[in-house]
Amino acid sequence: MKRRIGLLTSGGDCPGLNAAIRGVAKAAYEMFDAEIVGISDGYSGLIHGEYREMSSRDFSGILTRGGTILGTSRQPFSEMRVIGEDQVDKVRAMKDNYKWMKLDCLVTLGGNGTHKTAKLLSDEGMNVIGLPKTIDNDIWGTDVTFGFHTAADIATEIIDRLHTTADSHGRVMVVEIMGNKAGWLTLQAGMAGGADVILLPEIPYDIDKVAKTVNARNKNGKGFTIIAVAEGARSIEEQGMKKKELFANPYRTAAHRVAEQVAARTGAECRAVVPGHIQRGGSPSSYDRVLSTRFGVHAAELIRDEKYGVSVALIGDKVTSNPLDKVAGITKLVPPDHQMVRTAKQIGITFGD
Ligand code: F6P
Image (cartoon, rainbow, N blue to C red):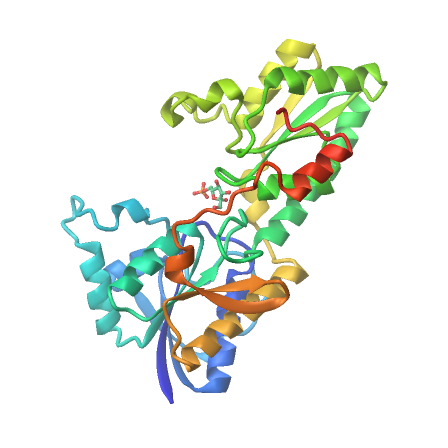
């Protein structure tokens, strides 16, 4: 049996992409007569026909490597059907290039946007398999995405390290954790790092309640406070604001806004820390190396069985798959009454609600 497989990585890079690519390739070479085509820079390479033939050597030594050997880019789903200034019909071009590259199937590794375009391509008749990648852990239908655990470990270490400065100087350290829509990463790292306040996009916060926590801790002789705020968290007042208005100054991010307001209300010395893309950098954790490998190998099994139009998922302890049309376009947010949130509240963590 011969299969010609196109691989692409799309959206923000994250640890585990190369491990997943390696998993697909190694298992495919073992299971059938596989030809693998590496498509450059995500959907951009498929639109513009930029790819390279790959061999087993390309997939050796990449298990521990961060980023993606294929390159990536952001190609907003909302613009996929829009003909831009370059006059390129992107969907038509992707269909034509799929044929021109003589692909039997396409494996797309990416987050929510990537999955929406994967479904579009599947609806257009291509054989597509999605692999759920994102540090945000917000893809519907899978318990966890690869990249999340590594980012959570990095963010936790950042919070651990901030504790020493917070304690020594008696400061409020406001650390901004990635996640625009979903707060899973902030919740996980915040709890693991022992943050006193956790602010999530899903739970609008009252800044006065945050300030009250800082004052109460000072009164109790704690002298410092760690606030973990998600990139996309908003106060009750900010809820009604348009993105343009809120980010009129793009460098005044969530952590800066919280630090400024807490300082004004409490008089405490506050520092905003934005670790940003450090959270997505470097080598995948042991958990992510194994999860990515399991996802990649399952994708090869699906190719062998010609089961397309699906996204690979971990449900319980089993790697399986969901139909793309059941998961693409649905963001898995933190339910405000999630057990983790309730647990955090039971040990005194403030969410500002
Ligand atoms: O989707 C992953 C993510 O890191 C989000 O947490 C964050 O909001 C976004 O990507 C940042 O995107 P970029 O790397 O394009 O700045």
